[in-house]
Image 1 (cartoon, rainbow, N blue to C red):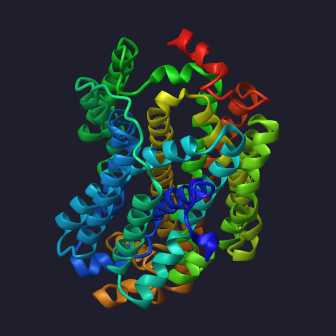
Image 2: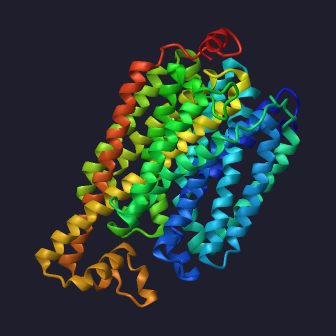
Image 3: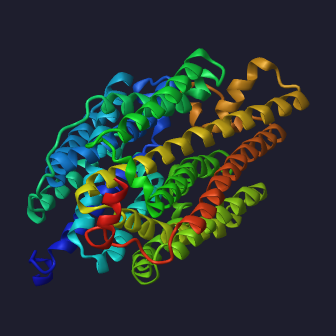
Length: 521
């Protein structure tokens, strides 16, 4: 029992447990709803667009507001902002669980994302400030690695809750977990000293509408079409607002987002790799789970279990990768890890044509090793590159990059899947001479893996075997094409890491790098 008592000697490890649990809760909510969507659609009468926005509203809110959350932590104190964010997240989770309509669930998911945007940068800054330079690599390895395990476990946990309880349990489970995190935060965290200052109310709307326009255009491109006035208009708005934001922020003495952090090569490279990794992992967690259900016939629980080979290396290696960073710096583990993720994506893209799950397992194992090598070292190195007074903002920038990476992964990989599958299906129906009126019903039946039967539509079993085989091959080609795109993104990130990262770790900015940063700023 003595080991469970919070003392001054072990307080930092209790803080690490609290912050890791909080980040895990945030990340799991990105993927946990994926297997619950069909049930939610039938229960709440969601439209096709509404189903997408149950996921998109959460991701968009985090991507848009996480930088503001980081600045709020600097101004008001990271501990205070974390507590407010956690309470917002828990209350919004309850609202999601009680949802009775499409509008209700989407608005609640957006508020949940705002709570997450407040918690995420604050939690990273709290961890980095609770440990000395020699322990930060190990601590951030646990913080980042364990939370990524839960991101990958989201579909499994969602499947268990949906099949064993109800889809509402996907959200209600956040209540006891969140309350435990709040109690631990109240017990372990001490009020930190706010840096003071004010919010730049010119930059705030520029950031919100600039990033929001880009992300929204990418998310809705599949529904609206790339040439639609809505998509083109949003992309033009983003092309104007994002550069305007950069120019404005670089002229401010107290910017909302300290872009001068990117003058540090390590900070730039670490953030780019983290965004690329999040791009690939989020896409795999969603589209990989969909593929094994649509093509291999897995149920929701089996689909979640299929990602376990990815999580095992994270569990074993991630804490050790932080210690490796403490010894040899970021270049070798980060560049090697990003390269392994790229190779894993290429392997799985090629192996999918076998239509056999065992061929996918080596790719998942390799991806898990790569992720474990990247997450701790890249997070720690990026935070070490920032002065202590800017770590709330640095954490906000890091999480913004990661969330934009995740959103781009879902949007771009989803666009590739949709367009390639449409092209492949058109070829199939031309060869099979399927009436045009039946095409959408056939695709829906295949994608539901039989789940549509209860709604009066055709099920996968109603599709002629030869046609079903061709449609599954079409879905496989589409998914593997998206994996190749993600692999290309990771390869570029690997080259950048190898060229820009130093062999030694970023000097702790409380010491040697502080004067260098001041000169840049």
